[in-house]
Image 1: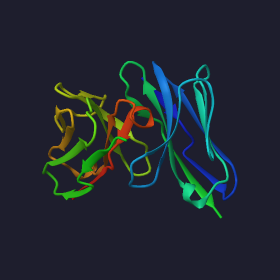
Image 2 (image 1 turned 30 degrees about the vertical axis):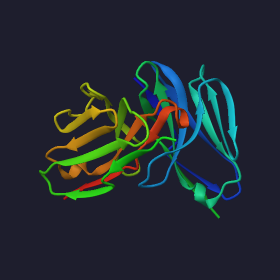
Image 3 (image 1 turned 90 degrees about the horizontal axis):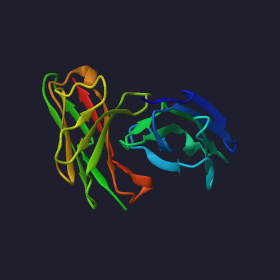
Image 4 (image 1 turned 180 degrees about the horizontal axis):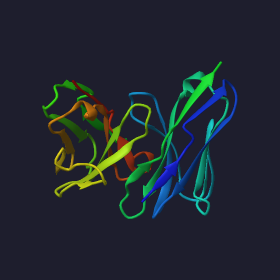
Length: 110
Length: 117
């Protein structure tokens, strides 16, 4: 099975940098996704990591360490519109199921 | 790109009735569809995996007789909540494997807010 943990809530200030961590224990790993979700809406894809290292995409970066079962999402130059839930999800090897972590609600203050 | 159309977006039903939710892939063939449920302030919980032409695979703790999944064609999967009760009120969302067309393989529907009164 999968066990995917994230902090429940985080707060940050506009213009700052925030790092959201995700730890996972998995019986089979085939990539890790980060999504943003606003209340009542579908998740929006942010990033994908399958190899160790950092993937950068504008204000968002995601890091993966497979040996440690660890990933983080880094958000730079925070904006008010970044207030949302951030979900990490692991693709299960063999089944391609996408299993979501507990999710982190981020609030950005002025 | 790949688009999954999910309907209805919102539904209110009486306790004891059944509700059907549809997810349709508009521009690709979705051989596999995942169904999730999300309670307020919680993450997405995988309910089941449906494969075209075969029985759905349910996650542990999900009642297959209560949440009927049909995937009769390559473009349509349905979830029917039978004999709905207030505790079934939730946000239901589907996700299709889109053959790597977008976002490394998954396209989500827009979700259905179910309220059982």
